[in-house]
Length: 63
Image 1 (cartoon, rainbow, N blue to C red):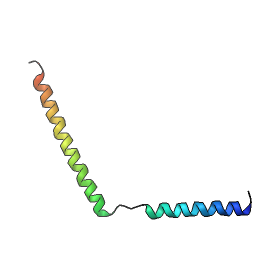
Image 2 (cartoon, rainbow, N blue to C red):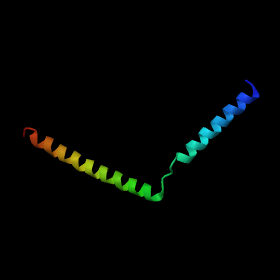
Image 3 (cartoon, helix red, strand yellow):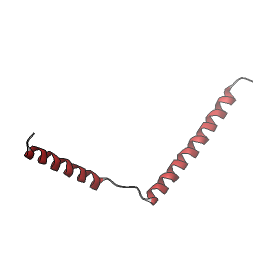
Image 4 (spheres, rainbow, N blue to C red):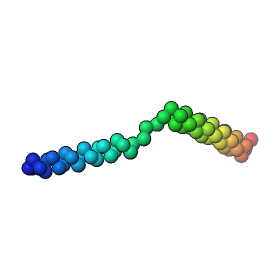
């Protein structure tokens, strides 16, 4: 590999890395708080659904 080719590859890799780091968005504390709230809503909702399903199945069992 010639010196020119190596420099061109290094420049292309450097540019690609810069583009990647520029477009990457970091989560803020507000984003994390909203995510935590959304996850909590899903977990509570699924817990209620699971409980309702269990009650429904138990009611269908013969006594």
